[in-house]
Image 1 (cartoon, one colour):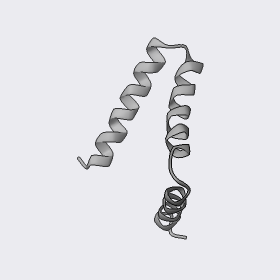
Image 2 (cartoon, one colour):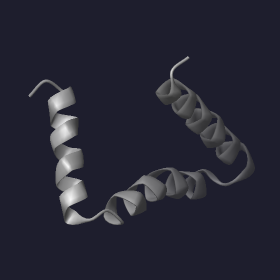
Image 3 (cartoon, helix red, strand yellow):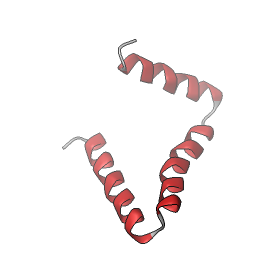
Image 4 (tube, one colour):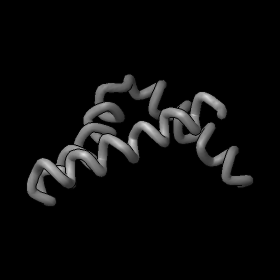
Length: 60
């Protein structure tokens, strides 16, 4: 299993556990908020690089 697949599987597991233990809206805020805060913590140059790589992977 690749490293990205392991991270994805771990994320799904944590998400399911959050849904069981917390109200659904709290789990939703955590699942959406953590990546948003991580993205906003990047420098503008890092954000541009991330967008460029993402578009390249999409085949644009």
